[in-house]
Length: 280
Ligand code: NAD
Image: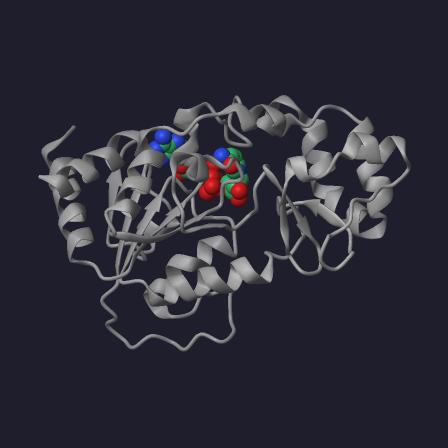
């Protein structure tokens, strides 16, 4: 670890201690140290299983056209490649963010990840922007359900598919946000409000290219994202939000000067060091 990295870790710790409303944004990079691959790397889910990628692109349209046949095909088709992810365990990066929350320094974590690892690590104030592989969600009222609340095999055998929401009766789908599916309004609005409100944003392990999530740092910096417009008021010029990236490589946020600085390295290494620096 270079002297410069050590200095940046101390700086981030001191800025977190002085913040009033710090939040974290996380992406697939924070989970690679838990053995969860990205999608398109050499060991990626879709590199190894191109059929899954094709199905993923068509899934939302097919579901909305006919939820019953979507569920039937899903339950009788090839095994879900994400099933393995449910066995993964959090790594020191996830635990460090949960600890920062317990210390009262981190108010919310907003993740793009669908792997449930922040929840397993103990983070409580969590928005799962792209949903979770551990949950179902109603397409109308957004009520979430744990997987064990529905016996899908039995429903298939009894010709009772699709599973329906216990509140409003509309079909439920996987909570994972499919390609082409809007981000559920509750999560999208709460995340935008948090980005608008924060005075420190810690961005961990994301390439920051998938929108609208990648627009959240722009909202923190400018009050609006280049791709998200709505109820947010533009921030005053010179707003003093601090945006810190922890990533294995520079991202568009680094290159475009949206973030103040990048701590280059592994989240499982840097985040626990920030926690230590906060304590000392
Ligand atoms: P990404 O794969 O586009 O970018 C990950 C970034 O993290 C890269 O810049 C990479 O260099 C960096 N990185 C990798 N390992 C790291 C580590 N140990 N420490 C620090 N940095 C590290 O991921 P993304 O930006 O989250 O976008 C991918 C999309 O795919 C998201 O929408 C997400 O929902 C989905 N996805 C989720 C998971 C998951 O749930 N774990 C995994 C793969 C993809």
